Length: 422
Image (cartoon, rainbow, N blue to C red; front, side, top):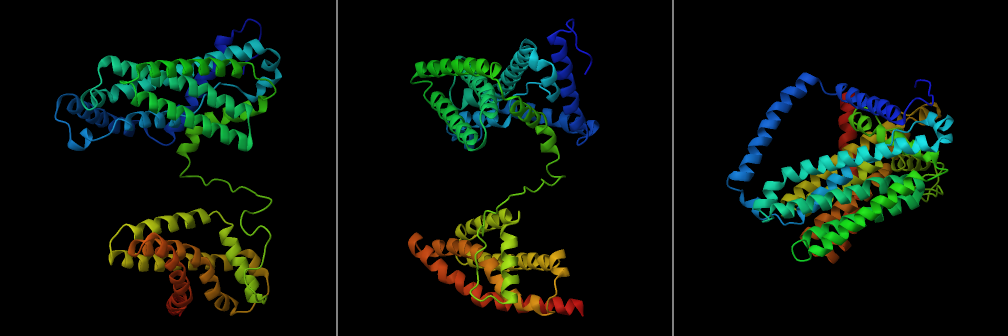
């Protein structure tokens, strides 16, 4: 940053920071997508979009589109509002050295940033309403005046949400911030959807809701400009919004750093899982606790949920075949994770018996498999029986699978692995 003087105007400083932000975003996009490839993909995409738009406006509408309810339109527009990100105020950590002692400079930058953010939201929503205009006109029978009122309501909702969410992110922290942000988003979405659905019957409700959005926008901007003592929170929120695009582009290439928790969520008191307390029992408990405390437990939960759906929806006997395949697949996955645990550096330096892994394997696999098998078995039993009987019968079925099928699968996979080694 150049040396600031009284001659330097706030507008020039804001313009320089805005250009730096735009160049950073363009550089992040260039690092992932080549300009020539984007051009080759963009031109056919625009032509295809134009063709679809012409068919929706002048051609025959598909049958499924005529059966879409009106509630889908405000829901999609509200989801688009939530996905567009937050407000970027172009604040920097070094501002605490100078701009913090000149609040008129700081507020001048923030006013311009808020105005720029609102204008961008209005343009994006205008494009969204324009693209959906043929559907609104031909499917839902809206006139052009109704479409303009829908755009005005959507723009007012975005104008209220943009500074309000930034204010909550800066002024609050922890559970209160998450709770109030969720409640605020729910109230905004409910009021917006209700106003759109009752636009034809109660037009005054739309005007009252729009007026409330404008009042919320004005109050949020005023409160955000005069908030004090939260400069560090402002910088954290600013960095989060600025790097949102970069994080989205690098999400698949860079692993998220693991969070260090002083106390784990599961097995917090390190209670004993097994009654016996031999060496192989300790290793078994350590294996099970290590896996369910790791980050892969989220994949485990997803597998159980998707497995429940996969055996609940198909008819018999297709769901039975899917159930058997899921059990075998889950066994292979857990067996791989069990082997990875025995290759850790901690177990490598500990003195242990050569047959310790073979002794611990059946009990370890039963404990790792039982929660997921119980959920998947519940989906199968509910499909075959009623809800109550299905939940009751899932417990003995999952227990039987864990006690009887696990040893058979363990012998099969262990013998096949030994043959590969030989």
